[in-house]
Length: 269
Ligand code: ADE
Image (cartoon, rainbow, N blue to C red; front, top):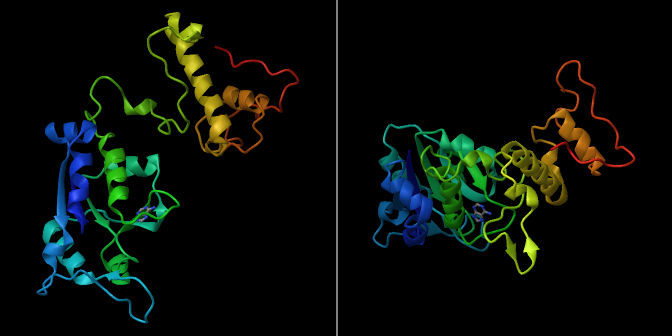
């Protein structure tokens, strides 16, 4: 994969891309990341990239010409998603990261100031992404977030030690708790089952913990997560009252999820 980033602050990317998984992915040739300074495509003497807004008002607006020139020069005849990072974009999610990871090439434009000239949005950008409902000083940290989430999904990026398929959100659920040695620390013990060596029971316990954690922290996710009928019943017993996406779509011939039982029983391990 090739990623081109267009920014007025190239130096902001140096540290984050020179460490950990993104660094390793570049070294392994899984991704090549190219940072471009939009200012290099400004044609006037002072290399101006922003101007005051038509119609008045505060703040500055990023001019269209250097952004168009930069993206068109770098991209050539290639077509690829051209993504503007902006708080007005659609929310970036794990599903969005997976979708982007399937492209051989991406272009990210980092907005600054009050925003970019609307013609950039209308005629250059194919998608606008926000990493959350808060306002950053610019799109650069958001671009770093997007690159990180995408690059770790590229086959081979995580190495053998771990697979992205178990990540929080990859299953549609949050992950349950993790433990490492020692088995007892300050009197706090690791759950017995994890020391048992019963792989199937450990997998079932982890699944149950993931369901429980999601119920406690992000019950909204349960509405969209792929769940078995047994899991839906169990979640109802644990007090979940929200919808399930496929409640009507249970496998043919199956009963719909039951109402909570009087005495909740644990999900079979
Ligand atoms: N630029 C400023 N704030 C942003 C956000 N929340 N997401 C993406 N780009 C941004």
